[in-house]
Length: 227
Image (cartoon, rainbow, N blue to C red; front, side):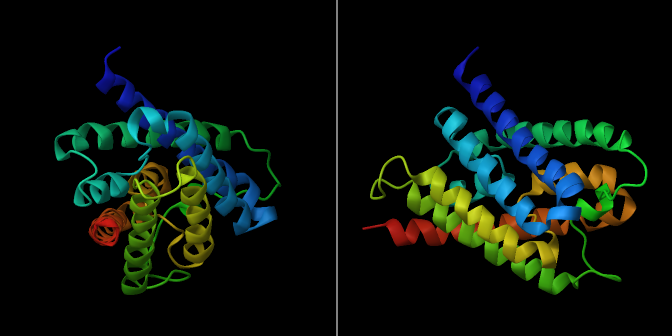
């Protein structure tokens, strides 16, 4: 297996684990344990996967991170398509598995469905598009500033996954009530496939806003770290 294949495999595995944490915690744990369960599940798995496979691929697990690192000059644009395809494949595979698991959930218990765990704006019970877009752009930008900064040569070695995982906990605690916390187009695509027409019609925003935020954060992080 050549180096590129291993990088794509690492991105597949890492994104598979991330979306598994989203689906598992949001579908089954959140109804009884609340949003903190989802936030900590996602932060913990990204921390773990960054240590496990980050040294192979860089541990993006997110198209917005890939685009942000290109903006920061940390990643080659020529590799982006392969990374994003691997991320999408990993996320969708995880959602497929949890869709099958959810189909066997016992009747009478309280579970979420894929509509509830998808990213949606507008309409009854959801924030408007502007506010959802704003929080997704701002929080993804913060995420990329953290990533670029803690992986720079000036940062203490070995601690980047901890900072990145904790930042994701903060992001999800802040954004779940507003946008259901995407900051990751692969995560949004994976759940929207099973979330029906409402989720699919909103999906474009959860590509555009995180990528715009990621690129902004990449440029800002690069500027902050430059001598």
